[in-house]
Image (cartoon, rainbow over all chains, first blue to last red; front, side, top):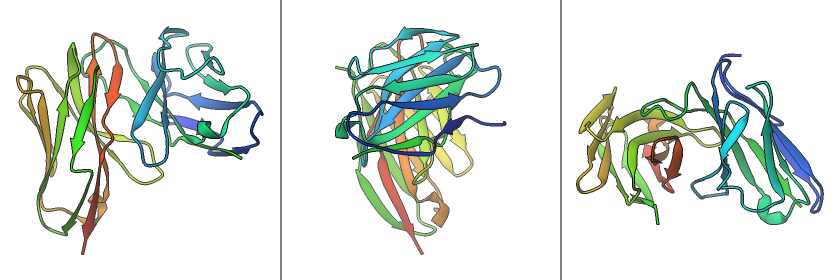
Length: 116
Length: 112
């Protein structure tokens, strides 16, 4: 596809369950980012991938959060034992290179996660 | 602590009027500053990107300015349209790679 896609678009889960969110970046983009946006708040950086490695995981809020990327393409963000405070929109972005001073990040539409 | 602060928090203007949104940051080392537009329920869309050496950059009716000495930026919207109603987010890139620090955004509503 032409842009970043994410699935599912909406996810409702019960507290304590695990969820997996998927991101398909723009083909050829080596850098991939995950962000979280709570209702009415700004975006919060979670993790950044360059290729399949994650040089910066500093934004992951707890050890319940993990992410991986394979084939320098698809990435999954996994949240284990979900809590109500995890409810947010999870946004994925990709860019053609990391470290480039003016490369643009292209965002997907996000996955809205609701933990009951 | 690296921070990006935006003002005002929200703004209502009439269609056809101009407006200016402000962004102050304390991010160091500074790499670049971006303005994004985010429509409700959508991902952010890039409007402008400016590096340390750039003072102004335009994208249609959007003009961004940057004063790296005072660590301030502004986004000016000319002849506003109803479709400009959105959140405008100031984002500063920290260091040599793309770790982005996001402001909370300014929510703009353009009324007919």
